[in-house]
Length: 218
Image (cartoon, rainbow, N blue to C red; front, side):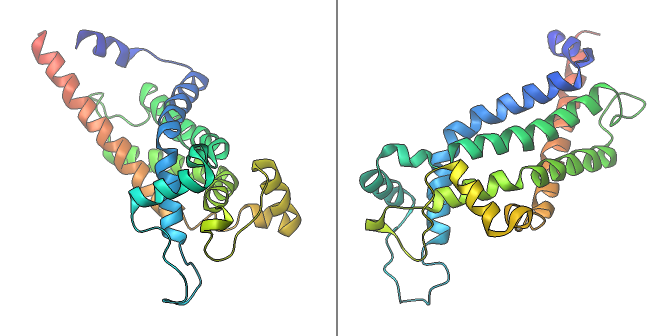
């Protein structure tokens, strides 16, 4: 606990905070990407086709994972990994880096040094939106690569990207910046609420743990 109290007072540069947040997100993103691939396949199964006019390939989460591995290889469960991790670097690097820097420089704390809820909500929510907006092309390509399946289990319209770079070039030819940033603003309300809730809760719990540390060593 005493060590936690000392770390709380230490001030890192914004660049360090960005790197720490980005690294943590990349580590988590690598292990959760297969789940994201399965989620996208289930959500888009039969998209834009009338109910009953297409064969339901994926029955559930485990079945979807099994079919993807069987028809496309185990490596297919990591489809879209590069843009997915790049998106995590942008999104979480910015939001976590901004939060920690604001906390260390006392921009989101009150006179007692504890979390100011309103300011924390605004800073963390806004930082999350900035990260999500900047990383929107990465998220778009990630999703399109994850949705791209083998012909043997394909349902509905399928793109034929050779990889991330091919996807970016195709989208650019399709409509330039507008195509790359398609739907960029639709995700902002969710990201604002999620980022603000997560980081404000984190700050409040950290304050509580710090208070236990103070009481213990008084």
